[in-house]
Amino acid sequence: MAAISMKSCMCLVVFAVFLGISGFAAVDGAGECGKSTTPDREAFKLAPCASAAQDQNAAVSSQCCAQVKKLGQNPACLCAVMLSNTAKSSGVKPEVAMAIPKRCNLADRPVGYKCGDYTLP
Image 1 (cartoon, rainbow, N blue to C red):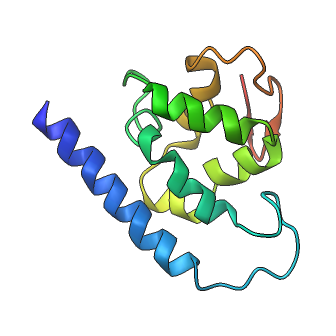
Image 2 (image 1 turned 90 degrees about the vertical axis):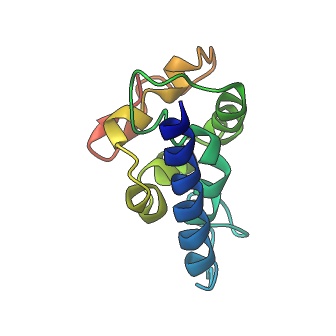
């Protein structure tokens, strides 16, 4: 159990570091997540999903599901966040992360949404 907690803490640290680095980039126009933010910044909000995005057998927390539900209202943003540099650098496995909305049993998830090489189940 301590190993899982340590792994989650390390993921949070990595998220925070990359969030800080990406926060210095200027946002010129509206991207997938809007004018005032970037997918890398939004990725930090999915920190509660760190272990679930790396291991398909890991439990998905209610905090994770709440954040995925919010981001899922904009499927393009959710997709960009799951494929972001921050997510990749934090060890997120896109094929595992794409299943989180389904694992959260979100009824209004964007089923079938194309996310790069992946499709949201």
